[in-house]
Image 1 (spheres, rainbow, N blue to C red):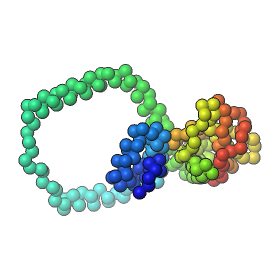
Image 2 (image 1 turned 90 degrees about the horizontal axis):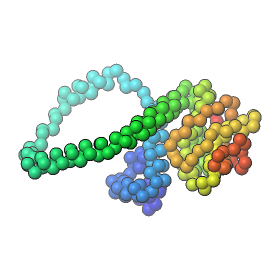
Image 3 (image 1 turned 180 degrees about the vertical axis):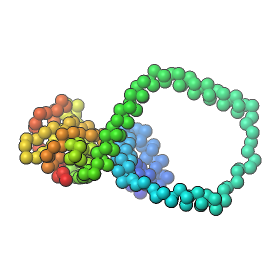
Image 4 (image 1 turned 90 degrees about the vertical axis):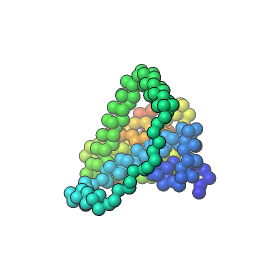
Length: 234
């Protein structure tokens, strides 16, 4: 068992923790924004990878499942259920009323949540398109600082999905910037923060490598520092 909860984001995202460690890490999540974002990003990435590797089940699978159901005895319903008392019934009405109040109070945020959902759905479509492209190629590297960057690139689409883990927090005046590196001058692929949410970037072109530098918060037209990491593109 590890003694540092910050090391549990990966196993937690993959549901690979024992009950004790899972409860311990969930208590830690409530007070650690970095771990919460990392776990959420890793779960999203795992879902994208699973989608990219998914296959249509064989046609005969449904028949086998239905035949197994017909042979399997179902568990009997539980006996001795207590009928709800008038007091419980009253409490249920109070709970329903409380839910209604909360729903009305949250009405002002509904539009914001709707727009956020639309943005997430659009991002999911872009990520899926890249990761399921016939020429999608995955490259991963680990920086000396411990940060890990994975790039899934599709030259036919001219896009790539970038996911990161372990990037250090930067001062507010600095940002991470991504670059396409190749036979010509470096080309910006956009900025990157320390969260683990997938980022879709365009302009892949004839780039042979991908790099990340630390730049001013507004970004730079050309790198102003040595890359903290680079990786070869397929």
